[in-house]
Image 1 (cartoon, rainbow, N blue to C red):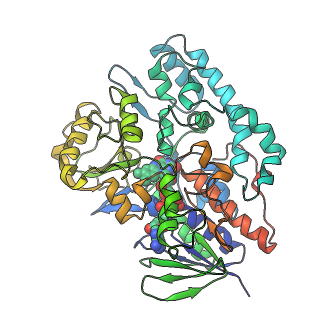
Image 2: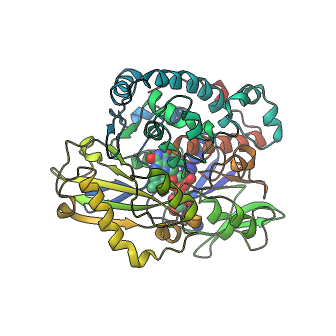
Image 3: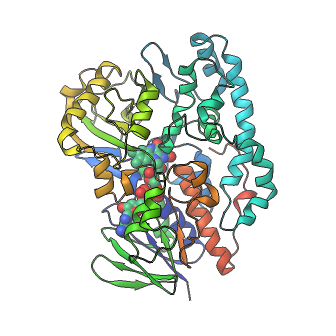
Length: 508
Ligand SMILES: Cc1cc2nc3c(=O)[nH]c(=O)nc-3n(C[C@H](O)[C@H](O)[C@H](O)COP(=O)(O)OP(=O)(O)OC[C@H]3O[C@@H](n4cnc5c(N)ncnc54)[C@H](O)[C@@H]3O)c2cc1C
């Protein structure tokens, strides 16, 4: 008889494992509390306008391709990709930098804006390529056992860890001006971290962008989750939306089923938890069951920052503005410290604006557009009274988009909108501390020090998503789905193709 796996949550991590496991012959049942699949990667609709709730940058599209190959499918039969050029517009008070994929145009811009630093860009690509080629295969491994550290792949990667250095320190070995270093380190925000704290090994992020590009997917990145859900169903899996799990049933420290919010109990052989890690550890198990991840331990762990979001349906198109813009605060370091350390509401925030309708006309009616604004923000460990300040902060952010971002007349063209505050992430999306990018990625919370894919608390229980190894961000979340699936297949003796046999190369 087929082994039955229950997956709690249909976010990118849950869907990846569900499609792989269904393909490998397991009976797979997903329970998702929301009405649609995707979690933070779900579509958000306002009338005829479709936004991505969260992710808008797809990097390493070849990893996504591999996940579909795991089920003997071609991702391009399901999704249409566009490589973005420029990658993004980085706007400071006194200059704009709009790098392109591939080195030549970017090197020329660096020469024009920061003469003398163009050689540093070539050094950056060469050295960081070596780091990526050594380190990424380590992230694809399972750290269930400490033996993983004895693997020659890991030992050869040790010199590339950049221990004791931050990503900002590391960029100092390539560039002189701080603003140029910021253009190659703001990517630590993808992990919800400060460039001055984020480990140097994450210089992989800007390297990957410059080497492999950034992609948009027609319909928005939420189309990826919808495509994965389609594969799950094609493989015979079942997806129950609007079905919240109240608790995970544990007997003799073995997960053996779930109790739904309506009281129904369903038994299974294994449980995959995709719900946010901190939320799941604190809410989905009977109090007192956790030995390691107790409430006290969770309070001591480090979590990412959060985001304040504006989704604006607009009766105008901004065809002269690029797909992604980042407008930096005048004092960027202070802004980062406010959201990660001092926990003060930034009076001069940095903001990210996605103008996806410039690339994709399926998102809004003709002549209209979707404007998505993300403001990195402190998480809910700060006591900010969001209900009281939400409307004045909304105005501040729209004003910045108009005056510094060039989105002229934005306020007058809004025909529909939605706002998500850090508190909404916590209460409506079940995200612990409203920390949208999950557990922080400091060394003490990486590899085997992150909650393990084969969850160390209970047998027959696996974690997938940004709160387990390898960490937050779509490609690594997809990897978590594959690592946990492989780990369970190891347990049952089911053969599969290991990631180390897959080539690291440009695939799409
Ligand atoms: C604003 C924002 C922007 C981001 N931008 C990017 C980006 O550009 N690129 C990138 O690579 N990454 C980005 N990320 C990070 C990351 O890729 C996404 O957050 C991703 O969706 C996380 O996937 P996940 O599988 O860990 O969990 P989630 O997407 O959170 O999925 C978990 C699922 O579990 C469900 N669930 C929770 N509790 C229960 C319950 N009790 N019962 C049943 N179901 C439950 C939830 O409803 C949800 O569907 C961004 C994140 C955010 C929030």
